[in-house]
Length: 390
Image 1 (cartoon, one colour):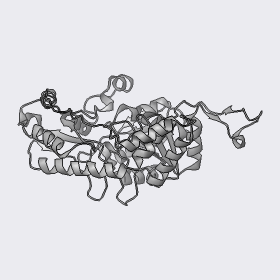
Image 2: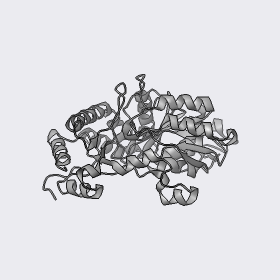
Image 3: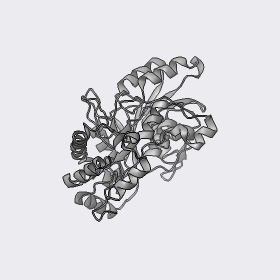
Image 4: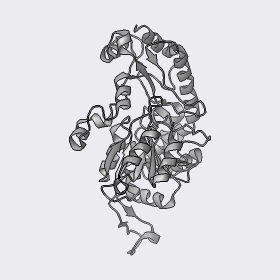
């Protein structure tokens, strides 16, 4: 193993102002369900342009509550992409719905609008789909405008899984999270994401009814608002009006999120600089394909995923990962197609070859380090290690 510092594929960027914000929150009277949460939600709305934000325990909780808040009948069909973490599809299962997949675009690695339209066209009208969950893979929002149009044509609700893409913008310049193309947008603030609250997530929406339902579901389905109660015994009284969950986030995390959000544009800009450096270094390497993004979008760049021609370099992926790790460089495979997981195979009968573009992508994918704290020297180390593979 190299004696130089290890470079993981992703990591948080924590600075002194973040530490100070958390320290202040720790000494406040309320360290959970206090003013920092509401302030963080307000900051998210100001940043994205959405009317409402609901901060929750993690990105999976955000997806779960977003699906539940739609109030769809149990057994409804939800369509997403196989190129995502299992949480996207699992959120449908948690709500008692049936997950279906459509293949990805070979260039963007995001849901293919053409495949979505083909799926909907071929499905029986009384069993077509009720909600679609496009995933902004690696931060790329490509195709969301077309998916929104298709969803409107077929009467589908739209939940954007934007766990990878806070800080990005759509083609029209509006920010990811504005819900311009969806009913709701979910974020994840896990440490490897573009900004962090430790663990945490959020749901954005412009719909006041969805907002009220999300707020109810976040805290056990309980309300303390006298205007919403069926009766009122006194100031201590509360009512459980739905089967909700304990998906709250803490004021400590809210304080960290507010501090991180103020620096998000700087983080995104640094990630773009690193992506530009990688793209330039790998542009003419015949056994590598660099990630593509439309030139008229600002991308949050959560991940930098290369496609390798393993045959051309005469090595398999485990060997390559081991070789660069010996030089102190981490890598990761993102993602194993969800439909190939044993649970999905056994429950729904998915087979190899069902979604060939996603499967081919997976077979050749490898993410290399990308995070704002990387120095120019760090990036040169990564580039050199990759180029020396062949």
